[in-house]
Amino acid sequence: MTGLSMINAGITTQLLLSTFDIEGVVHYGIAGNANPSLNIGDVTIPQYWAHTALWNWQRYGDGPEDELALEENGDYTREIGYLKFANYTVNVSSSSSYDNLLNNVWYQPEEVFPVDGTPEEREHAFWVPVDSLYFQLSQNLLALELEGCVNSTTCLTETPKVVSVLRGTSASIYLDNAAYRAFIYDKFQVSPVDMESAAVALICLQQRVAFIAFRAISDLAGGGSAQSNEAATFTSLAANNSVTVVVEFIKQLSAASFHASFVS
Image (cartoon, rainbow, N blue to C red; front, side, top):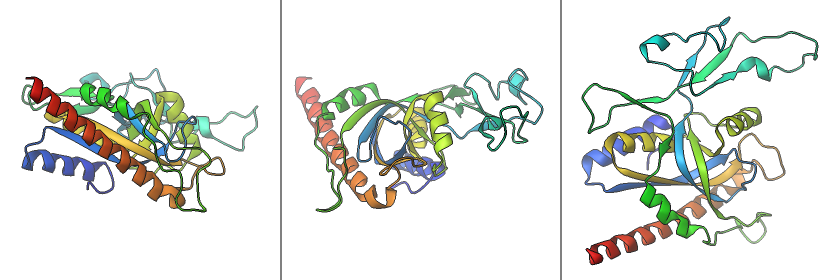
């Protein structure tokens, strides 16, 4: 168990890899949702993960055309994009000019020092792919039947499903804001939004260990419909669905490993 947040997940993953002889990491849990086509109870299998809370916060008065502090050293970049706080100002007329002292935050890739790399020579990573063989194997789970009821009287209106998605995102932030949810979906096309998976992905990237994550949707981050933010009601259902999927994946993985050993 990693515990809450990116730092706990990263520390736990590194301890796991340092203490045991690990062939691969299979991570699972629940998440908020940024993708309007998904529903509570669905289990997502993202192909890529990113940490979206490493920022360069730009000083007020500077804009997209201005170089960031320490950008010339290669420490920061404007390649990934930014969030402009003034775009989310409310209660102003269409003819009003307005700004925001919080200005812009620019998304940054992580510095990574691979275990097989040159010492003290950094690399950068924003979108971290899951293991290609793990991802291919996980596609066998898309028809898996999942639970849709907490009990005899509390059920979801849509039958949960296993879904392969492009991207997931993590940050040490509990996201319950519809405007930011819509922003990161439009900007990055992310589906699950959690607080740990990208940390696990980054440690596995640094250590060159196979990795995949399964995240069940417990709520629509920020609300917006009758069943959009029912985390308190459906967390247990989402958690059980994530366990169902990961157990089946382990069976598939064990069968594939046995077959590979037998063939060789």
